[in-house]
Amino acid sequence: MSDLTASEIPPVQAGRARLWWIVLIVSLALNLAAIGVVVAHLIIGPPPPPDRIEGYSSLQILPRAFVSELKGERRDLVIGILRKFRGEFRARRAEMRANTEKIAAALEAEPYDPESVEHAIDQFSATGRLMIDGGVLTVKSVIEVLTPDERKLLAKRIRERDERRRRPRREQSGVTDAD
Image 1 (cartoon, rainbow, N blue to C red):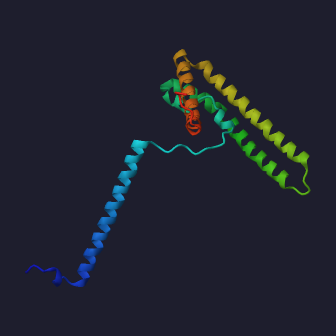
Image 2: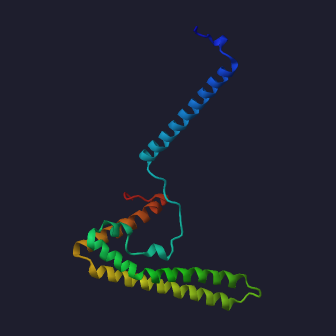
Image 3: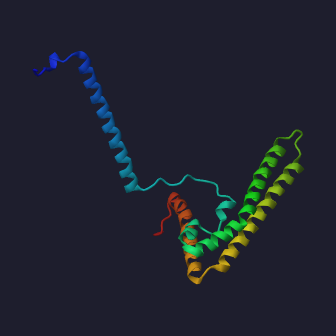
């Protein structure tokens, strides 16, 4: 067999070779882009969370980080208390969703009845208060069984969570700790 020169390569093989080069270059470019994204993420950090309107669910006192740090039977005890109240919370959330639907229906009703809207909003508010009261009772039940070290850990996690929530607002307003 003899070596073929470039002018002797049939056009079909030359087209395939060119296609493979294109595939290799595209693959290399995609790999470099992925590496660049990972490096940028490591250097800059994750993007800030989107702005959001915080509702009653953001008023929870027990941060997840606290519960996840508890070990063994202590964690089981706290989770058992949370599970005891879980059914009530699910029912109240479903009631809150139903109440928002009642508000929407009252708003679009013809003829418009302001008293219906007010009544629907009052129902929503009453259910929200029941949810908060249930949450307070749950937290009190958990705190009653905590050791002094666990109470200190809970206080630390609450402060850390609150600091994380405030940080983006400070950065947006230009306020720093040095101010």
